[in-house]
Length: 150
Image 1: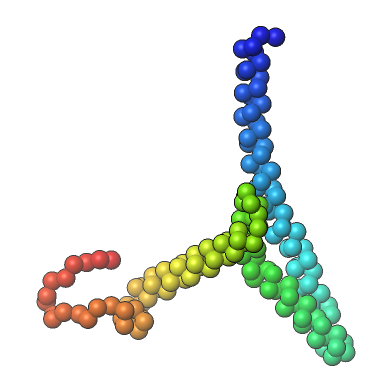
Image 2: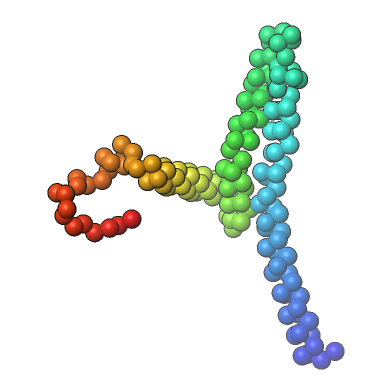
């Protein structure tokens, strides 16, 4: 085998190995949130009123069912946060606590910014809200020209 053929074969191998490495990182990142989902679903299901939460059962059992349902609901309601942390830790070169903390902080900031945008858009359609009106600068005299910013 010539050196040109060997070089060509190693280049093809390198291209495929890079894609495979990225796919392995994606798979490792998604394992944590996906592994938690069945446990959360079981907790919610067992805590429902047609399973362990029936009124005919003793009070102790129904209270435990309520705790189970609340615990599973907490995981399901915050699954986006779990995916955020899982992906951040999976893709980090140095997977320590700072990676998870940065992921949580980024998620919370992103969530609040989107919520603010949604409130602003809905109030714009309805003609304004009191919070938006308080944030606006005082209006000028009627008929005065102002620059449009929105």
